Amino acid sequence: MLNFKRPSGTSRGVMTTKETWFITVNDGSKIGIGECGILRGLSVDDVDDYEQKIHWACKNIAKGLSFLYENLIAYPSIQFGLEQAFLSLNSDNSFQLFSSDFVEKEKPIPINGLVWMGDEIFMQEQIQQKLEAGFNCIKMKVGAIDFEKEYNLLKVIRKTFSKDNIELRVDANGGFTAKDALYKLKKLAELDLHSIEQPIKPKQWKSMANLCLESPLPIALDEELIGVFAIADKKEVLEQIQPQYIILKPSLVGGFKGSEEWISIANELGIGWWITSALESNIGLNAIAQWTATLDSTMPQGLGTGSLFTNNFESPLQVADGQLFYRKNLSWQPNLIEDLCS
Image (tube, rainbow, N blue to C red; front, side, top):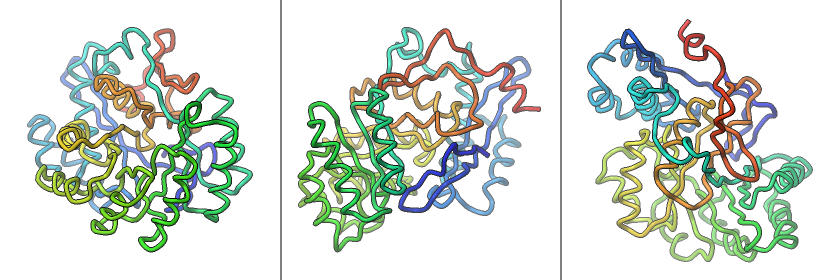
């Protein structure tokens, strides 16, 4: 159980802990590790037999990644954990899964600073901290407190910083209704925001398509992508809704393979995208960051969640000046994999 330093709020509720699982693969000489990052109440694989499926995967591990991946189509977080574990096993360094300048030359990945929902004072404190920490892209969760208060918080930032200085993103986590969403999007658009994530709950394709067509504020799909497995279905979602962006959380959409399918379709349709972690520990975050670095995206990514927990693992990942670095002078926690296996 990962413990939040401070309760973190979204429109779905307040989180104090985050459950996570680790799979290790041993070939007799080396151990690979992967993280299955499930989000209770959100992940499509938040089901009663989740733990049994992980045990099944471990019992059948010798059949290889392709077999396991195909037989765990409804368990995207386990697929992702297995992808990581096999990459880790086959790497010279258990924690270096991909080759890129991010790892080899400390080239940073620009990220957004995340502001969690809470009362007005708490949100103001977070905004100030992110600005002082050098972030030039801030993502604010909205939809929990009074909309006018949230709007005014954003307005204060925009009065001080133009869109050329600070990029503002908001995430409603489906917190608006189909009836009031367009009014709120038009009002938020007055503040020169970059985009809004998932303004209404998923599975309302017609309403979401109308919003994407009529809203002056670009819309990014997030929860809408969860539980869509077949390539044909992924294409249908994007063709029907025509969003401006999609947001990919590998733990929720089938790991790297599932995410790359979404990216390929989005590129064909001229839809933008970026990558976000789903509150993994530094093990999962490291894998996502290294993969993201290979995609050559210049947009700020959502990879700043590693500092949220009191009991995260020591790693070379470091956030500085609104960017994520892989520092060569920092080490992974000693005996980390061995301790998790014991």
